[in-house]
Image (cartoon, rainbow, N blue to C red):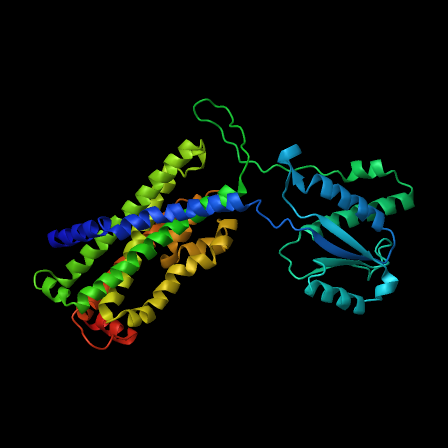
Length: 439
């Protein structure tokens, strides 16, 4: 084990002293923070060119309401600031009212207006069927545009249509509009945290406003931290083993150290590098939140400990697979083909994380988080998500990952011992399996 420690120390020093490590360490948070800053700066940088929309009102009762609503919108919502600082931040809406008799009935009318949208004459159009006010079964209000992403006018038109229909129907029934407004006035439901009793004072804590964004982003960020540690550490490890094999450096090393000791040393060094990376990010995140007076968002010490445990196991588990691939292949082209199944295994949690974070205590979330290759990411995701899961589950998951890691390291040791000295043709999966079973 002395020799394994020397190898691990050498791998760690070589990694952390390299320019690539420093650049990667700095680049990741810079890119993330930079993307947030760019989004904030560009949030109001929208196209303010006025947009024209056509309207076919077959009821004859919406034109006045839309004229008033558009005039109010263009006056109150399009500009910000006063005087010389008055700035246009949204496009104005320009409505073109089309006589239903002149354009005909659908689908011909819809086709004519669609052609105008395609020719960039208008941005979209809305058709109001004749029976909408009377709640006719087949009556509809349809909005057409070339894209559904920019839906500002659709939402605006929906509010105007519904308010106008409500007013017309209430007047027809002889109901005061003010009464209607009081009846339909909504009440906001606040999203609050749970309360608990303080064991020291006996008092009950004050509920805090829940933040759905933080409740999702924090667990996802911790999961992505493990995924990044695996991908950033395991791939260079595989490439380093492959290069040492090609340069026949491994043959010299194996003259003084056993293959298994060499592999364990490389894995231990890789784990140390990943812990250094995550440690820097944790410290940086804590200092940033302290500076912003948002330290309550920072995960608890228990979550940090689980993060370090699961991250170490994940790097060991996947590192063993990647290092065995590096020993069994001869060039990067062969490595890319061989590593695809391992990459899919590592990326599996990405396909289900949203389901898990929505229902962290469900049977599906429990079962999938106990699947060893997915446990480090998904179990940490469940631990960091709002709510609580039984303590036996992370311990069971940790135990299963340890057993799986031992199995992977054992198999990788067999493959590494045979493949590191093999030159020429790359080993197939069947051949690697035979090395594990027979050697």
